[in-house]
Length: 149
Image 1 (tube, helix red, strand yellow):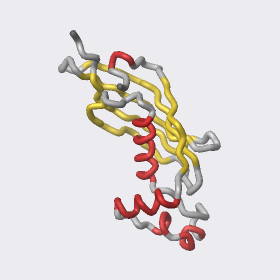
Image 2 (tube, helix red, strand yellow):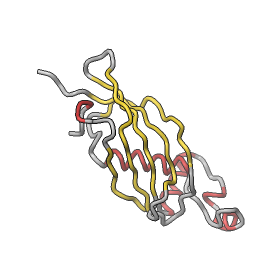
Image 3 (cartoon, one colour):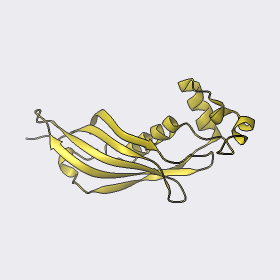
Image 4 (cartoon, one colour):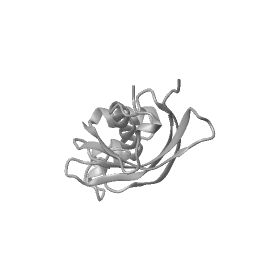
């Protein structure tokens, strides 16, 4: 079981495992999303761009972050709902072969009118193998409170 609302503290940080972005990730995400922009799917086109090669979809990397966070176990069985993604920025390109991990810091926690849940505001970052932040923003989530009784 993951962490309950009461288990989180403002200022607390955690880091996920890493994950390498593959060609299959990009192809599969293009198929699921319908986003076949040549910057992601056409190697010859991408060579002529400022990136010099294909880049991963920004939303693919965001989705990877959510998966990496879930795999960390912190929210396993206790996350009720996503409420908001705030000020999310795509800072640097992510390329095929890059290995990314997620970093989370609890910025705020607040109770709700319902005694079984609370709200967490978290600063999140996606960091590549060179230690560069490639994405950053804030997630607002609703999590379960510890059962009473």
